[in-house]
Image (cartoon, rainbow, N blue to C red; front, side):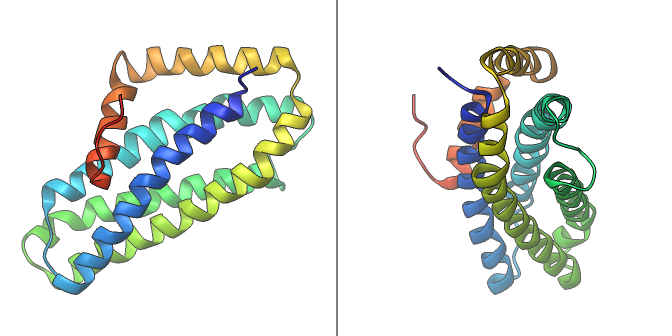
Length: 186
């Protein structure tokens, strides 16, 4: 039986692939000082829309709510940590976006800010994903019953259809592969 956590873990694999590419991009920025605006915009697009609007929304609006209904508090416990980290990630992305115009103009401090925030985002999300995959999701799998899992999967599908739109998930899978320099799997 497919579980809601299987879907979330699969999305993590796509996000991790892009995080690895983003780390390389940040390191390249540090070494060269040269910024490719289009590339940074693509990373922002992926992280804002796939990682945040698609993935984090499923967690925040559905998955964590179900955990709370099953007795895991969303304040002071592991869910609160995950929510705080989602917010930290958004702050990194905002800082990258705000620094981009000046970085494109060649301002060294702005290029450094983008590199530092991109690396900060990568490290934050890699640690975050590890905690979810190895602590939070196994905890959820123990407390969710089959009906919970089925309902979450249906709700995830609804989020994909209503919030993201038809074909958008696939678009971000393709972008992930492009950013990572990998062929798009069919």
